[in-house]
Length: 313
Image (cartoon, rainbow, N blue to C red; front, side, top):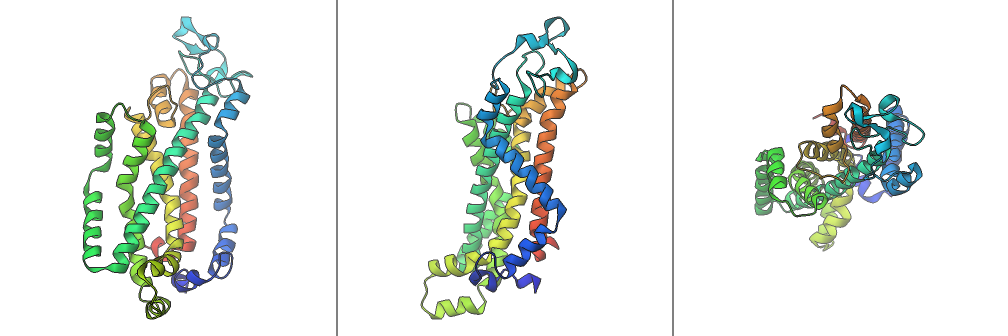
């Protein structure tokens, strides 16, 4: 019953009725979902309004404030908690005096932009490949399945580091988005393929074939809506992975380059000051931790409700 709620009925029932209403009701009852949504909305709003927020704080992310650091103490921030004051709400960077609040909100913009764009590539490519492999079968399934296996067999992080190191004079944000998307699609493609293999034998799909509906119409009108539940659930689980990957690449020095701010880059730079200015490490690390945790909890809840079979595997 729970395992079939998003197959044939989901293809015909409008959003907000039937199984979708039950899923929404179940999600509303979970405190973790409510808290996660608040955190996700907060950071998404921070990313969208980054220029406005930095102007509100009075500093741009690349503006130096030499008066906020002590040159006689190796450029340590002046004041408690890494230079927290009315002028610098989250303190400043050691040595440079750049405002941490401005860099954190702009770092959220960069990190979430890469994460959402890469996730869109992963979901679109994986869903298309999974539906094609599951529905057409035979040679199409063989070719696409072997391509999935080949892509997943690569040591993706090492290959990403190599590609990002070789490509120098390119748009780093666009390159990171493309590279992360290139290696991320096989996972969701396998999920969608399995769901499609189940859906294509249902009566309403057979009826569409008998009614002389073409493959494109069947795929878009009958198969695709039936995969919506697992796709939505796994999309929210892909996002924290892409955020962490972007942060890891930037931390290793092959991602976003200065002066463009990034949470991973800020964490890497703060390692040298963790004992003298721990706030420089705590602020971006906390933002990264809360964002990844919120998306992970939200994804787990969505998978439990929308794809109960997947949550047990």
